[in-house]
Structures are given as structure tokens and as C-alpha cells.
Amino acid sequence: MSKQPKQPKQDANADRYIAIARACLKAINDTSAEKGSREEKIQAVYEAIDEAFQQEFADYHQSTAVMASVLERIASGQLSGEDAANLARKTLDQQPQSTRQSVIH
Image 1 (cartoon, rainbow, N blue to C red):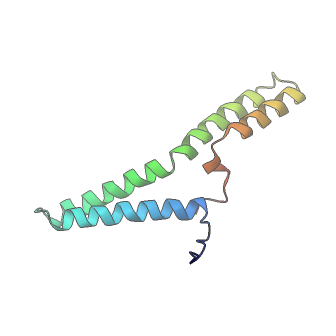
Image 2 (cartoon, one colour):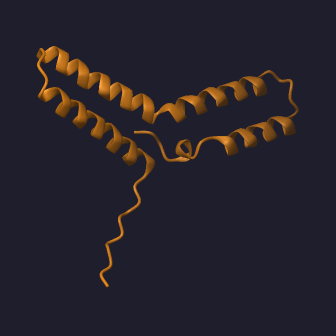
């Protein structure tokens, strides 16, 4: 019985970078065989990078928008201290797991 070595668990940022790198490599491979100008190929790779970034950071964008809305409501002064704290806790509890990780690189 052979044991497979345990792969270290990567953090969410490493997973994001890997996904973006794969998208870049795919775009480079896809465009290398195509006809077209160098500029068109560079643009295709750029678009693949941009799309990969957008996909990887969608949760952050959504979470930031929700939290900004909650902060605006708290800042309005219409909530009691306890209600504001409860709303903040609920918002933090509902954020996607991917946004609870360490700092974004």
C-alpha cells in the first residue's frame, strides 16, 4: 500500500494566481498557432488575463458593494448601537468564504 504525499493546502490567493496563469497560458497557446498580427495576439492574451481577473475577484467586488451599503446604513445614524452591531455581524457572517482569506496580493 503506497501512500501519496499530502499536498499542502494552498491559500485562496495562490489558487487565484494559478487560475489566472492557466488562462494566460491557454491564451498564449491558442494564439501562437493562429494567423494574425503580433498586436492582435497580445490583445487576445490581455483580454484573457482581464477576464480571468474579473472571474477570480467577482466575490470581492460583490462583497465590497454589500459592505459599503451596510456601512452607509450604519453611518446614517438611524440604527441603535446594538442594531448596528447586529447588522455588521450578519453581514460579516454572510460574506463568501473566498473573501474571508488573508490579504489580496
